[in-house]
Amino acid sequence: MSAPSSPGPKSQLRRVMGFWDVLLFNVAAVLGPRWVAAAAHNGPSSIVLWMIAALGFFLPTALVVIELSSRFPEEGGLYAWARDAFGDFHGFVAGWTYWIYSVFYFPALLVASTAMSAYVVGARGAELAENRTFLLTGSFILLGVAVVLNIVGLNIGKWLQNAGGVGTYLPMVILVLVAFVVWLRHGSAAQFTWSTLAPHWNWDTVNFWPQLAFAFTGLEMAAFMSEEIHDPHRTIPRATFASGFSIAAMYIVATVGVLILIPAAQVDPKSGMFQAITSGSGLLRVGILGVLAALLVTVGNAGGVGTTVAGTARVPFAVGIDSYLPPIFAELHPRWKTPYVAILVQAGFSAIVLLLTQINQSVNGAYQILVDATTAIYFIPLMYMYAAAIKLAYRKDRKTNPHAVLIPGGKAGVWLAGSLGFLVVLAGIVLSFIPPGEATNKWLFEIELTACIVISVAFGLILYMRGARAKARQQASASVGIR
Image (cartoon, rainbow, N blue to C red):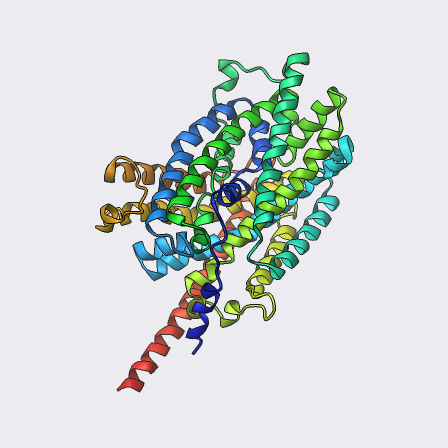
């Protein structure tokens, strides 16, 4: 029996994260320069869409995360909430899909990060950012570095999380300042009028909406490490409110900044933010700003990868990996005490997905498949989270828990916040299947996207059934032994 091994990792956890650590962790996990680029590529109407998403999705999500994390500050976060609300099977589905989404998230993040890093060489980076060989080579190098670093230290140091948050936020501050000065001296590349700000509901905009919602996700990730946070009942809610406001505001003003500097049609949806900084800093004759921003965001992306690994790597343990997945997944590295098998498997699948999505697709089309597959799979566990908030609101401890920070409005408020979040992510899953205008082969886009999602979820269900049967046999043997 391997039962004694399960409390082992938990017994080694230390409460090392404070308010600022969680705040910067959230910034690194949620805020993304590539979402600013995607929004600017969609045009000035994205500014209104950001506002709608912030009020109709981001705020309800923050309220749900705050209530659940303050009531149930348990290692495993979302998995534990889904399990407690709906049972082991649904908890496994929520945990599995949350873990497996990173197989698609990492390739998309790595491609975008490589494209952004190209601007370290200045204006010449624009050509490199569209070069498939450069993007693939850089992505594999970054993936290898991420694997090594996370095997050596799963419990990522606070310095990396904090540096990731700062490295993500500062380039956007640079962008906004450059755009403001350029606007004063040269005017804006975009016209901000009622007609341009009004959303145009064409197919590209509809496909963009799931990305917009995805850009506002990640606040739940810190809760996966509740038992490594000082006073999580108070720290997580305070850090969530503070980081949420700063993230929403920055998405809006940074998108405005890009559109001031570059026409929407010319914005690269992966690295457009750095196009804008490079262009603006060139006009101001301070080209070093573009290089500085590219260097900073490289650190920010490293922190973003680190936060994702820090959260998702805890899922297999919280799910009860000794029961539903092969026992080797539960093994810790003998020296660094990290689940190295899970990390290596995750990296291997990510590499395969990165290659497969390049088949008969443009660079942007392949990137879009990764983004849409990530969005659709990731939204499955989020649906569980919103539904769990509603169901768990009927437990008596909601009113008696002295540490709970509750959603305003009683059960009606919970239903409103949970329903808004649930409907947005459900719509996001459906809309993810609409190919963007840049997809060179619409049917192939649909086939590749569907295959990515179906195979990923089906593989998890097969593993669950295998583990459930093994667990049932063990329980039957144990009961016979007792008799």
